[in-house]
Length: 303
Image (cartoon, rainbow, N blue to C red):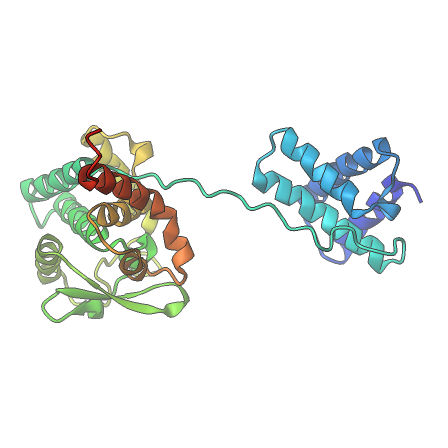
């Protein structure tokens, strides 16, 4: 059977049995047409393709400058296609069986400098203090200031932050109990600034369940509203809004801690990462600090 007919049969199966969306079907069709075109030019076909042919195809994609993620997507389509051919008895082996998917390189996280974070916090505090505390604008300004203090003091995920319960405040507000992914709880400490801001905020609240209550269905502030208010604050501070988000401040928290000499395991615990490999995205900060220490303390550094 010609390769185009095999592709057609595979796409029919994807649609009928797996309920794949039209866009997915179209994308598989394009990827497999390109793959089978490569095989034909090499004097082969899908039913008799061997592992070296698949590897050569992936090398061609890499040579064309495709990203690791794009190559992995193409390989996924090819892999499912060959599994289909094997299951249907059209081919006797799956040439993709022991071919590993390329690993996409994680980019370095975007962060703000310590000075930029301080500018944001100072402006938020100033605006919160300049407005009538019981007015709607005053409440929003104070809420934004407290959110910023807590985010930069703890590195919480924005979803963890906006949904904090009042019961999360421990003892004299020196610690917070944070519920993260998988309902895992962790205890994070607060610095003096964030603790003072939090205690003043709590005293101003009406009785309720959440630290940042709202009228919506969830009962707490939506993350999109916080993100919008944060970008607007950044604009007023002279920082491009595209550079600022709650997640960027989480990155800043981790990076600034490591720059200050914190242990990677401690940062992992504070961020709530289940695996330290996730935290290792920040090792570029440790590398820079190690170079700085060597240059400063090595006996021949002046040479």
